[in-house]
Image (tube, rainbow, N blue to C red; front, side):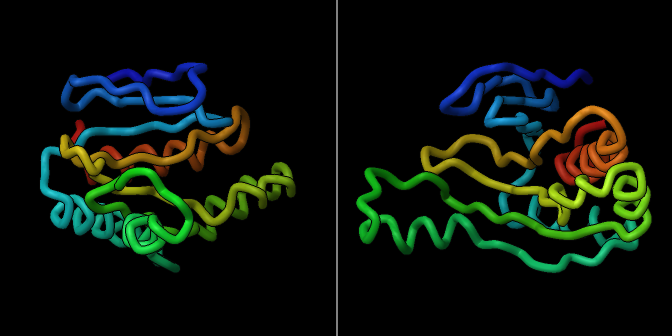
Length: 154
């Protein structure tokens, strides 16, 4: 499989190819995989992929619920997600390594991987923010392995 990175602004590039990463640029970029599962199963798979590596999930941000709850209050025009959560975690081993290489890498910690389904339906997607070249690529490799496993991508 290959990653697709684009310089598009203002949204995500959607590809209909299963098991092929989708990507879009939102600053540094986003890497997205389509999951061949329902949202709850994909979320459980993501949680398992994180904890099976001995990592601790610090927080689950229920972004989809928050956006639905506050849509009318903030003048939202439409529902964005059927469901969307971000799993927040860190790796002491990898984080120490990348921060010893450059203490400014603290800006990328903790790490987050999201699982979402758009309001208009479609596939469940699992993704993460792409990280800069250099030492942070070790973290990106970790995130990519977790996202691929959770999405069922070989």
